[in-house]
Amino acid sequence: MASPSLPSLPAGLASLIAGRRRLAVIAALGLGFGCLGLTLLAIGQGAIAIPPGRVAEILWARLTGDAALLEGRDVLVVMNIRLPRVLLGLLVGAGLAVSGALMQGLFRNPLADPGLVGVSAGAGLAAAATIVLGDRFLTGTLMKLPFAVLPFGAFCGGLLSTLALYLIATREGRTSVATMLLAGVALGALAGSLTGLLAFISDDRQLRDLTFWSMGSLGGASWTKLSAIAPIIIPLLLAMPLLARGLNGLMLGEAEAYHLGIPVQRIKAMAILLVALAVGASVAAAGLIGFVGIVVPHLVRLAVGPDHRLLLPLSALGGAILLVGADIVARLVVAPAELPIGIVTAAIGAPFFLWLLLRRSGSLDG
View: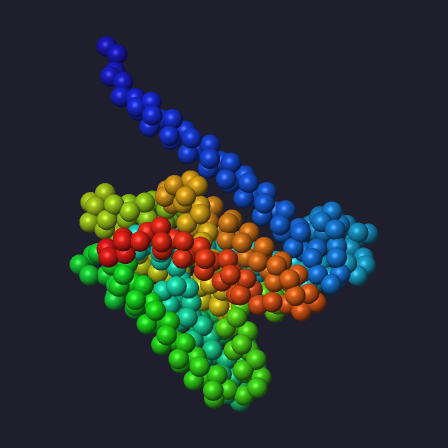
């Protein structure tokens, strides 16, 4: 006796699913090759222009250990200045974009973003306190405040801001986006006022460092800084497959996700922890860089849909591309000087956010 066959999907639905899959493959290939090409281009940009072909040759020689090709001034520029800067931009951009996608999944609204809701401001306040107060009170014991303290301080600030935001905006398992945005504005204003107080009591050297955090820059990149940041952001990127199913379930609501067998509280706790970790490390490494976490996930969602199995990795690629591209603009638009990268991302992200608000007008009361 033949076993009963499963009913087939309607033709329209099957065609839609196949189309989404093809689009996801095209998007992944396009973002992957775009990220690679932009990386080679970014490494070659600067006061000493290096063609992308020569950049690829230097990197390949470094990987293979071909000493004959690792001589000359351009090798020193690529390996000691440009490469750590671009790698830092890739990590920070990917971390901020994935953090935005996680917060949007957690709050079930595409308006959520670490920069807009005060998480980045909280991380920046903690980093500012580490610079000013740590440098003032720990100098006698540590002689020089190690860079590793900054990500830890910024992480604590980002974690506290994220937890406070979630507790304020969530009632009876339902998160109000209006409350979330207003609470984010209040948290950001409070963090900004305290950061201003720290700037007031800081000396000239500390004030220069605080200015770096407030506007954002990749100019201080080094292998030491990269080695301190990479172990903090990379776990977020590795955890994406573990969080995707849970976030997909949360799209139905917390009660529905719980009945589907999804560990809701564990997913929320892991998402909050990883967002605070990545945002804190990004702020410590590059300062306050806004709008990456809202622009990239929303564009990816428009292209391939809300499935977090695709949304999270494609957002990582898109965030890396956006920040490295913004860094190229920041280095070239006022050359030989350098524009703060936070200005470039704000110029891109602010109009996009206004468009998003207008597009969603009338739906912010839920």
